[in-house]
Image (cartoon, rainbow, N blue to C red; front, side):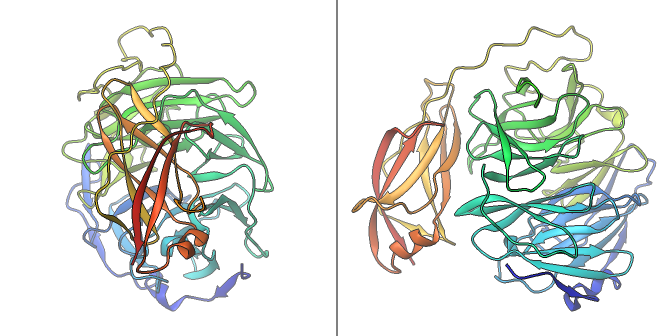
Length: 473
């Protein structure tokens, strides 16, 4: 890992002082719902967060840019310069207490610290294998970045100091959040664990979550407990994310409190609002904005035809969210989101504002691992990964487990096991990235027989096995 590379102003980031384009939307800022289109089309809008000066910064994942919007609705875009590959993505961003903007980009090969006040930028090479993912900046200004691909963990970068990546235990996936006490938390390896990271970023404590065949996909500080999280079934190319829930964990006891938001919901990004309720974006078949109190009273409301991706609170107390589908930033006042106006589906235990809280439901039964449908022909390796279909029967609540790949001859591992979830009666295509060793074992142009194995979460016993043919182009 190289040391920090510092430049006065990166040539590729010249738009920091010379904006590409500024757009002022026509809707007045005081309206209940205001829409601000992003100039670059199909930008792939991602996380949005609020800076100390009240401006809001957001990711343009597919455009190699980040954006800034003022409380008045003025949108400015900033290009991130040359990338290692043609299809590089912007992974995540966060804003430090001093206003500096940290961005993980170039599909995780690099990070950059931008100073909007001076236009200066400091680039940090993260290298390859593993790649950078999520980033959160602590109160002391240090940036914490998840690292995944072949190895997993977290790197901590302190401006002005040397930094390096060392594989740490326990492992982290690309979900990261800061608790009220300033500690950093991540999704642990597997489906149902959270990790409280030590201050050195090379240690941590793992906490199990009740198994409901879904994994944490958002982490944030909340009004009670140590860390709040959202969970849901992952979607497929044929189905929407579903079976969502939200809750918190108390690190002192390891106890959790979780509420189901419904079979048609999928809570994702979340943040604590000025009212000390947890506010979250809801994906799935019922897109909208949700909120829930520390006692489980909450609702989910649609915002017209908009589909929130990530949300933050502006200095005006309104919610501002990105909408990747409509390529816009949307502002909505919280009074428009007081009650549920969409079909949440079955199994809701979140309490409507006008009814008493029901007793906590029993934990759902453990899910099956699913089946491997027969694969015809040869599966091609694309961008260092292959997709393996996993089928879940209708006679179980859902399927979850870990998928492993090894050569049929010799049993040599081709990749780290991949966690997956599949809804009842559905089929998902699980994407598995090959390790460097795995890529070497698959010589270009040759067809190799590969053994696919399914194991239950937390178990090494192989429950389902099938051989497929794989070719690396």
